[in-house]
Structures are given as structure tokens and as C-alpha cells.
Length: 366
Image (cartoon, rainbow, N blue to C red; front, side, top):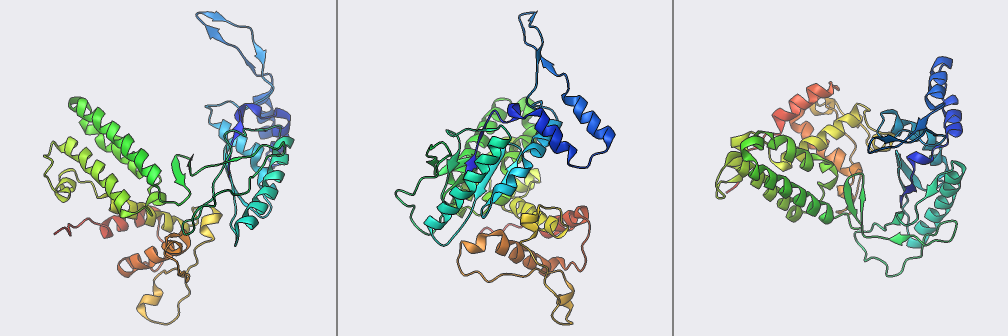
């Protein structure tokens, strides 16, 4: 369930927020600073040289400020305790509630119970649910989607809509986790940038790396499980971008294109980012919901290979299950260790350097 709040940042009650801040153990001076930060705030409107009178602001946190999202997180953080048997993730005003189970009825009953409790928590915080933008999605790759699943309803009786695609934190999720919609949007965005670069190649060609690669890199560790057919479509627009930069003809082989600009293949970039996430896990630099999914294997014998850091690979039979972080992280890491052979944890910077030496593109095309 993707939960949307109406005017979330503007609805923060200052008295409730100051009370939350007071419970976090700040020093008296720090707490007094925050209290003063909210005291006697006013706003006005300026239009065509005319300035309105000041209006007292008793609600909300300043949007666009550095403190705004952090203060909102403090304000809403305790909502997580109401999730019950479901799981919840809060990222500023983006909230998702989810669960899994052996049957659809079990899943929907659990989700409805948790959602009811979450709504009561929102009411206590004077936050209003945006029912028209709050959506539900049933994730199931192996079975056909149910024709008429039971509705999840709000406390005031509004039936939430089921969707097949939803954009969450910049990533288009679909109910089968094929990422077809997301990759289609990436293609469109990159093609637009390529068009801009082509029309302005005299001025902006040198900036191609900084305009194209961030689009393709963003959350690539998530959509990397897409089919090769879809990922190949990203390769195609990636190669087009390099041809614009290098002014190479269409017939230039992609391996030659990589050599011309010194950029790795997208496959190598995804592998690099994925292994960096796994290593951050070993350094405890990721949230607990990820760090809890990996277990360092205990040495079983006195052989040389047993000295290297390895992860426990769980037994998973389904092909889809092997795409999960639980299995994939251990599998990728243990494969890397056959050549990297780390015996102790090193700094992330050192790891990135060693990884760059391991993951080098070699042309295997025939």
C-alpha cells in the first residue's frame, strides 16, 4: 500500500512536534533553539511590487529547507509502531505499508488491520489521508492477478484503488516486478537528453557523462533484475549517447564505443553498484532491514579459502526467489571472493578501488 498524505509538510502541528523533540533528549539550549525556530513565524505574499500584511504561521515545517524533511520524520516516526503485523517504511512524507502471507485473504486482512491503526495515528497527528492518491498493489509473479480482490477501505468507508504500476521514490514499480514501465521511462528520458546534446553538441557534448549516466545509474541495483530484453533497450540508448559524444557512425561496435570514451558497459556499472551495496552491508552502513538479510559464514575448516569473508547462501528453489536480496547478495559476494579474496573488512574507498580492478570490461562478442 502506497500511502499519500494531503499537504503533509503544511499540516505539522508545532506543539506536537516540539513535544516530540523534547522527548529525544536534546540539551536545554538545543531544545530552546528549536522552540524559538517555530515561535512567531509569519508569512506574506508579494505580487507586482505589493506586499500583503503578515499572517501568523502556527502549522507546518518550512519546505525547501534542510531541516524540513528531518523535522517531519521526527513528527511522523512513531506511526511505525502502529503497523502491527505488517511492515512499514517511512521516507519523509512517502509511506508504504506491506505484508506477505500464504493466501490473499490473509494478506488483505492483515493489511486492513494495520491500515486502520495507521489512520488513527495520522488522526492523532492531525495529518489527513489523501484517499484519491493512496493506492494498493498486489505483487505476485507466478500466479495470475485476482479478478476482483477484496477492497482495502479507509476509516470513512472509501475503497482504495488497486493499480498495476506506481512510481515510488523515483522508481516505477509494477505488480510483476518486470520493471517494463520503469525502463520505458528511462529510455524516454535518455532519448530526450540525447536530443538536447545533439542540438547543442558544440556547447554541451563534454557534459554528456554527467547528464546521461546519472539517469541510468539511479536505482539500477533495483531494476537490474529486469529481463535481458528490457536491459538491452537501455544499452541501445546508452550506445546512441556515446555515438553522439564521439561522433561515431552507427556501425561502430559498442565495445569500440566504450574504449573511445572510457566508460564501462551498463552491465558492469550495475554489477559495481550492486557489489558496493553488499559491501556497505558488511560495514553496517545500510538500514537494519537490509543488514539483517546477510550472515557471514563461519569458517568450516583450515583451508586457505575458509579465511576469506563469505556469506551464507540460503536454499531457495524458485527462480524468482533467487533474485531476492537474501539470495542474490550472498551469491554475488561469494563469486566475487573467488578472485578478490578479502580476509578482513577494509574501507569502502579501498574496496571500490579493488572492485574497479576486478570488474573490467573485456569484449567477448563474436
